[in-house]
Length: 99
Image 1 (cartoon, rainbow, N blue to C red):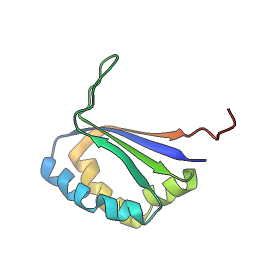
Image 2 (spheres, one colour; image 1 turned 90 degrees about the vertical axis):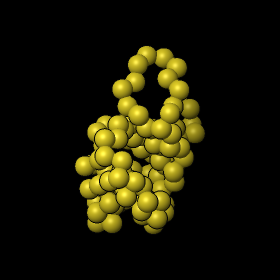
Image 3 (tube, rainbow, N blue to C red; image 1 turned 180 degrees about the horizontal axis):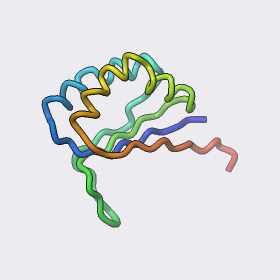
Image 4 (cartoon, one colour; image 1 turned 30 degrees about the vertical axis):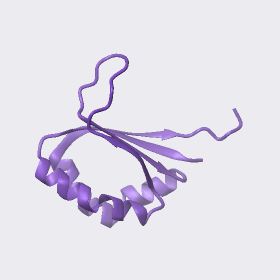
């Protein structure tokens, strides 16, 4: 079942975040992940939102997400994201098509 990773981020060190971002797609592509959306100016339709950027990723399944997130390649570049931002990352199960 497809899973989606939703990151909501506030960037406080642009140079480090840009370094992370420059390598992100190359690492993501090695693990069958897909970047579906990345927006630093999303429209808030309801409620309030404290962050600056939202990123939406898709993986074939939870195991694929974990393989990517826990890989040495991703952990290496993620050090810059973790140092440059604060926020939250959610893992959301997709619908299996039987509903």
